[in-house]
Amino acid sequence: MATLSTKHLLGIKDLSVQDIDLILETAKSFKEVINRPIKKVPSLRDITVANLFFENSTRTRISFELAQKRLGADIINFSASTSSVKKGETLIDTANNILSMKVDMIVMRHSSPGACVFLAKKVNAHIINAGDGTHEHPTQALLDAFSIKEKLGTLKNVKVAIVGDILHSRVALSNILLLNKMGAKVKVCGPLTLMPKYIQALGIEVETNLMKALEWCDVANMLRIQLERQDTKYFPSLREYALMYQLNNEVLSKLKKEIIIMHPGPINRGVEITSDVADSKHSIILEQVENGVAVRMAVMYLLAGINH
Ligand code: CP
Image (cartoon, rainbow, N blue to C red; front, side, top):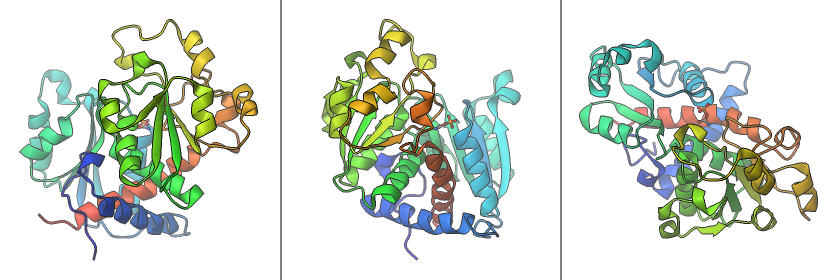
């Protein structure tokens, strides 16, 4: 059986092209499974997974839990807001206490970049990064890639414009790393104040004009402005941002072609995208969510097969 080259999924940067291909191919099989009348397979029977969410989540948390249930795993759900973290318990003490109950795999979301890397060095369980601050969100990038490949048949030479708050987005970084590895072409688009310094080092072109980015791309991945991570003003107002960077029907009607519209969620309707566009036939936002379950099943199934 083909296996991954890594014991953990901490970031896309640790995955080889073969790893990514293997995850996407395995996810295809799991998508077939979850569309059958009997949606469960016992691949993770006797495996215990702890979902540690130190930061809010809807899609990722539910998707991981459903994927675990479909694979027959035993599940522990931990939410920092109702835990002893509120009494001052540290991340490592929390993790060690949970692991002493014989947990095999940890899925963790944390607001600190690198929290999963830290945990992976300290504990003897498979760690999956479900989003660490502004750093990486590898399963989001994998499900985005799966969704693009499902629509276009390939990632090679597909032109993807990632639009919005690139500076604070772990989705942007993981997508850029993955799409670069798989031979897609990527541009980021948004105000220069929302571009990270490292962007040029990644070989990515920056486009500040939304219309030009859309005319260039096959796929537009629209990101939300992450006000909760912004300690300073990066643009005058949300209204002004929307005037320049909102994907709406007026903008789309000027395009001479059709593009695929993506969004990782949560959507700020009326800011980066209007409701009519988010809910249009060109949008694959809910397909992304559906594909997330199959992709996360693939990741956990493949990691569970590694014993080093
Ligand atoms: N896309 C995503 O990570 O959504 P959640 O924050 O709801 O998990």
